[in-house]
Length: 290
Length: 330
Image (tube, rainbow over all chains, first blue to last red; front, side, top):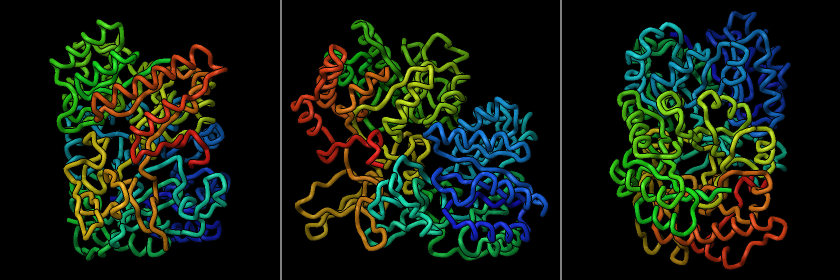
């Protein structure tokens, strides 16, 4: 079982990003995803900065993958996507089928991120034919769903053609909108957002009026209010899941990486915090804990 | 420019056709479509009856099979396509790439429209779905008018936009908020914030709405209580309690009609398969009159006060918005 660091979903200052990736290079993580996946207005790091980080991480023997955006709305954003597709060195994670379309035209392999709607073996088979080499399961699916899908005869002959990755730690990306909810929380319009999301390195929490953490507002993205944590499910993933993804948090990401690695076989389980959840994997409501 | 109206029942379908819809869209009585609600939709016999009625009036029938097929009973989605095709559907509204591929291979002569649930918001995504021979794309409600215009200019494919009804504020097909709270989402179960999870509680005059136990909103005695769609509740962010994502309001694009017409938008879709025949009647009448007026003389088109009054009366919370079409909404 390998471990990956997902793309940083929040808007962090450049220095913080560079420090995070220096720490990643020194860590035991196997795969690192890099790139802005939420909002094209976030430009602390530009494409060339990401490429420089990617090269540094490759030098540190990490497998590097460039993550592209989830919601493309404007022609200028597609031009930026084209740079990712044409990078010439690194595998690309597609989070919108528009990226798959471009990668397919260039006969390039790709990772289908969790926001690509692949819910069954037939869709997966089509994506493999288009060049998919790694499939990140949609976050709302369960162990049962994954197990059922992977055991279908339709994909038995291509089972070796792709890896399976599961989002295993962090606040789950659950929705993307035309509207910016962080700007809205500061009474600003999206056009006048002044990149205020940089002031919220782990997003802004939205709680119910009686105090339950419901969502995390992260620009145009809405995340789970709870932190998804599948550390105690790792033994059940054996033979099914090739890669477990940890989503970067401002603090403690690498400590959790160490804890996850220690519990691959179930020998170092961890108590979940009250703010953790694992419902989706257990076929419950996502915010539940089983 | 086509007027495409919703129908969740035979009386609603007849109301739409008799009051001026050019086409009607419906779904089967199961979770193969994104309005999988109790007591709604069509079984196989009713679907045939619907097709006959629509065709007798020279109109078109669209059948939505727009959830994502499950791994353990994929055949049901194939069967849904078979049933719709055999009943005489003119159009299949699809989202799952496997279902698109099946329909394209098995029934190449039946038009395939890309459902809003496929979440195609840009030219590259539309390009992706062309390999399944789609003839039309239903655009998600996240785009501004400027962005719709850019797509209309750059893509050589028919576009359909939502003109009126419940407003999804997230890119459709990529929103898992409902399953996060309830375990059921539009993608997997064909429902958002399902009614089975809704609870109402009166606390000394304050009405609380909950979804699977989570407090979505509290209403003072003088407030109108709306259905607890989870993205339209009031939550605390920082020191404020407000509609953190969106107010309970409906999309209404009547003011944009001349622009949509000028860009060659092929079809205006009215949301609301879950609505009553009376609702469908009123909404169809207003939009028929508006579309006829804009087609007769786009330059001199003006929105009639009476249309807006009818639409406001039909809107969620009696409020309407231009939504993302208007940049300031964002």
